[in-house]
Amino acid sequence: LVIGGTGTLGRQIAKTAIDAGYQVRCMARTPRKAAFLQEWGCEIIQGDLLEPESLDYALQGIDAVIDSATSRPEDPKSIYQTDWEGKLNLYRACDRLGVKRVVFISLLAAEQHRNVPLMDIKYCTERLLIDSSLNFTILQGVAFMQGLISQYAIPILEGQNVWVSATPAEISYMNTQDMARFAVAAIGRSQTIRKSFKVVGPKSWKSEEIVE
Image 1 (cartoon, rainbow, N blue to C red):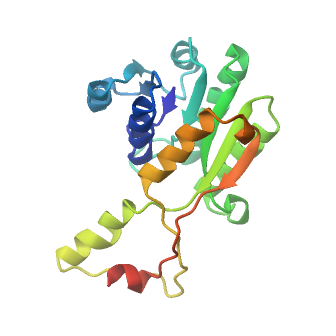
Image 2: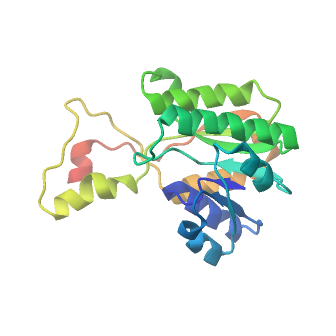
């Protein structure tokens, strides 16, 4: 089961898992928006992390879960409701139904930035898994290269201003396809169980380098 399968990363995870020979189910709040996943060979099931009964249905017959779900800016509910309560519902359901194998996509250094709500939720979810009996793998990722399209490429192509931090940090961006390969590979490797891994790109980039 792929959670967040319609997202930028989730769709790559679903495609990678299908190509690797797995039977893949994706849960979507609005199945019609996941039609492309069905065309790739995914089973689509309607569900919502905030509706526990739908999770019970989605997890029937499932051997492993890859969780790449993150709330979006346009979501009407608060990030703590959408993400944190959703994670509690998901992992409680996994434990109750005996779906022990989970891969969770987190963020690098989340514990150092708990004043940022998304980072705080990622950190708390990591702790939730560590304190559980689930056979988890945590992948702590960084920003994705695909995000640079809207952040830098489109404004530059349209002759608009590009805003950068006064003290920009160098970021080792990842390709979503590479992160997807890590997530799917972890499922079949017992040595990744109950461990966390930092997953970053091979080169760190300054903002001015990206603009150039």
